[in-house]
Image (cartoon, rainbow, N blue to C red):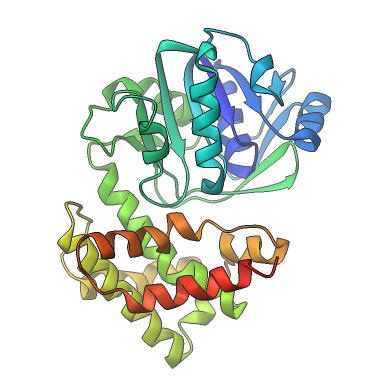
Length: 314
């Protein structure tokens, strides 16, 4: 099985090492400094679960150098801000794909498949729910820092994901449990509610997830964010795992946030590095759907505008 991983951050290196450790033939598309580090050192997965070191991983910096008619799967593990560019590049270099190639998107947010569906069919484009924590202490190393539930693979377009079982089996065999699901949309929305409530607000205030729950003012904002997202889901064709916002809040405040009390969000990390955040795939998606289905999402809009205001200073 030949797999091209596009995006060599913590998730990309971690997933690449996972499947390569189980015999998959993995190549990576990466930027210059990261590409150099991978060529020199290979890739490593450390932290929780089995540690792996994979040498001699082919790495590319230019789509024109990638072998033609080669890959069974493309894994998209970049930040969501790169999706439009990646989709365009894959379309402009279709010769690297087989007719049967599938794309699996391992990213935050919801609706990330839309960029790829401009060029590829519903039977080719799939999404993953990843709530395993990966960080990249060095350019060629991914450290697994948190594990709570399996990675899930599925379709947002009502296509059967059964053939993705071979990928799920590789990842599971590497030590990180992975499953296919016909309800990946529900689980992606579960992650969306969590991320949209905590990521931007924690970034704006420069605090951890847990600290947000200790302030009555941030508690009020978080509750309003959750309420608005549930209204959007109710008005849209989508579903999630809880019937009411109060049902979700019970779990959110009693378990989800305490389990990640000391965590700083990826949005926080992006702002510290002064690079664009993934807010458009998170809160921006809530706002888009709110406008589409005539649902007021004023708190989400306010938080979104604050992040955009911060980004505009970079």
